[in-house]
Length: 159
Image (cartoon, rainbow, N blue to C red):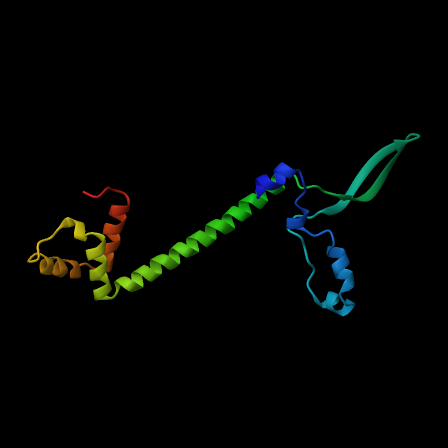
């Protein structure tokens, strides 16, 4: 998104504040406007600027309303907020995944199936008389052991 605005050379007005905000506020009834809290944009667009000039030996100050373009700091801050929002969504999704996995592993049958499928799979070619021993071995794992082995597997290769 940051590069999109940079490439086109446009301001961030559609994202940070609307040009027609004042128009929309005037269209609402006055009583709604008085009761509603003031809307403050993320980054202010319009402010008052002072311009000092000297004319015939006198210093004059001219105060006028001026429009502020989005500068690099604003664009960087906006990009950072977008990335923080994205990472928050990813972390919440990951947390939900792990909670669902932990609840599934509380059930003995699910835990046994997961261990047999994950680590004691069919490609190991166990003999038929070894299969009951593998089932018994898989039932002895607890959730903490599975989590530990899962982390070890994530950071190593299969031996």
